[in-house]
Image 1 (cartoon, helix red, strand yellow):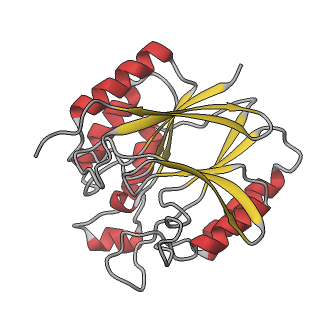
Image 2: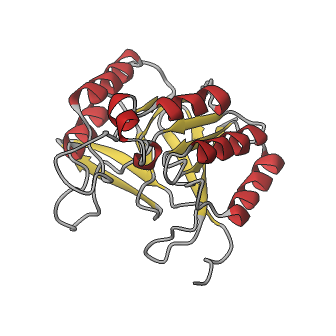
Length: 251
């Protein structure tokens, strides 16, 4: 039997869509997936109150929650903390509500695509540094020969839209090629608030890229609140079902 994952992203507690969250929570209660995977932007401004709301919601689901940090999850108003310990509040959340996935079908590997500061403004787009990429590649290489499907989870899409010119994620092309070469079957992400599912290639290696939209009121490009269900089996088999949550709010 396949491992079923609910993939969500960009919940943005602080400007969350409570109705959409209710729909997702109800589906989780009814279907009991093996885990919920959230690929970042759990909060809007990384406030303690927003993190508390996020922890309460993820704990209420009653299934493991595998969490990834996004660019909105580092402090906006406490610059000292942002520069000295940017993921402290996020770590508190993962200690309170996060979990690891144990599956015979699929393994999830994290890739950090957020940085506290970068040589451009704004600092919201992706930036994959060498050390985080090396850690991810090492984990993938250690899984060589493992029959389970290998999914890398990060916040930012590693590649921009095809035929769109430059890549908004600095280091994304190199990261894509490196993790594909190391055995990743797919990379899942959020950030752009728009779902997509496509096979892309870099450096002679192809890999599936799967992105999901938002469950917040910060809608973009006409995409409504949505989530997706990933049914995973060994050998790189991933069936993705996109689910739209009602109609987009007016105004």
